[in-house]
Image (tube, rainbow, N blue to C red):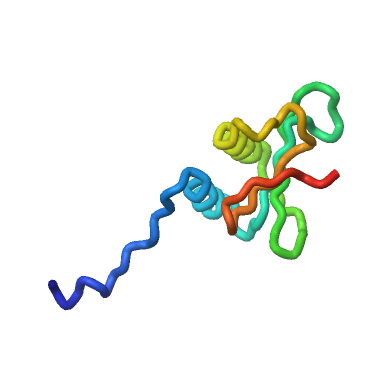
Length: 104
């Protein structure tokens, strides 16, 4: 074993798909702690993707529309079993890589 083997440790690579998604989104949304995704936007009656990024203090972060739609699609496709059409939305916690329903 070389003496420099431990000098440059490799970053820990997430093994689960949800953990990999959380790591990817953390780099795309600096400062975000939770990403809220709704299949139906608050101002429309037809199906529409809505995404809100929230920091640890509960403040909403600005996310450009194209990035928000892309991230919302990634989350919905990563959790197809979540029942998106029947629910009011879900929150994906970037710190724990867990998806939970939004409280009404």
